Length: 254
Image 1 (cartoon, rainbow, N blue to C red):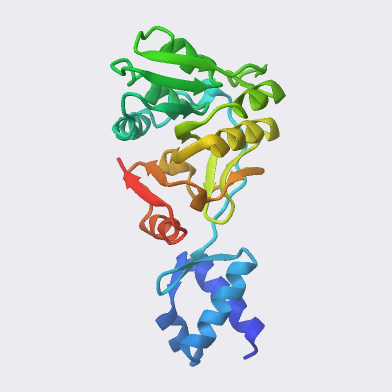
Image 2 (image 1 turned 90 degrees about the horizontal axis):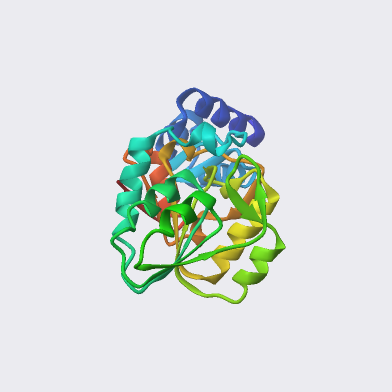
């Protein structure tokens, strides 16, 4: 059997079982572990699988369309609130933080009412309305044009303002988290704002529920390894958690 035939057999096995091990493949093909690792590396470079410790899993990235805020605000609310509670513990009085636009970051904003001497920069209309009521928060709202149905600002005005700032921590959202492409969103203007926020923060946290993991949208704004920590829910699959940690991001499950 030629190498290309073996690699196709590996992909057939992954489509059936989602994951496999080097031991299983060496027994199947009666070749060395080194040969199998070479096949897996080549298939990973082609974007067909993701290497794991001792084996591989199918790259199940799925193109995901963007939903409006109103369409997703009540989805997986329990998970979002648990994630927000975990993220809240990572914010200290005196911090300057960035809150990206999103439904999970909004839940985090709702937990900041007891904060003191906290500076928050955001481009999210609902987050700004939530935080402007609290005396202990100095709120900076990024200008720009408002994305209809998405309740946030984007554009060059906000980007230029971000260039003059620095922040301790950024709490970022994503429409999807691909093991291969990282944190993604469908809108290019949204990508630019997200990259601007990432660029000025000392520490970067990605907060998203597990239903977004293993999917992708059109535009990537950061690789997984660019984040210091992923805060998600306990339903994240073990193989996805393992693959993300292999890329250098700490995974915290709420």
